[in-house]
Image (cartoon, rainbow, N blue to C red; front, top):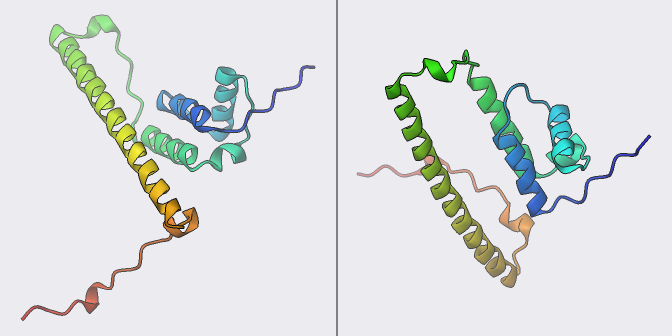
Length: 148
């Protein structure tokens, strides 16, 4: 019996590949099915604990699961049943979604670069990740004095 190959440590590249698996996920989703799909795609075995320890993977999994439970499965229509107007509407929607996806990817890239600048500057000032991840102070809205 061939032993499964342990997954390599999760670096940014592997996390991106794993999150992309979630982007296209259809149907029932569980951590076990997700880990299975990752193994088929990458040839690497990861446990639920390993995957869920990475915030980006955990959030992407939760978001996808929520999306799938919100959208009820529709009955599939054959391509021949669409009217030309419906086909054109689908083509337009696809173009819009593609453009939106490209814009969001560029925006995400800019935000990642901004994060690198901020984290480098914070490190220079001696601020560590724990300090930067502190919760914001509660706002006491009742303490605001009324304007006269």
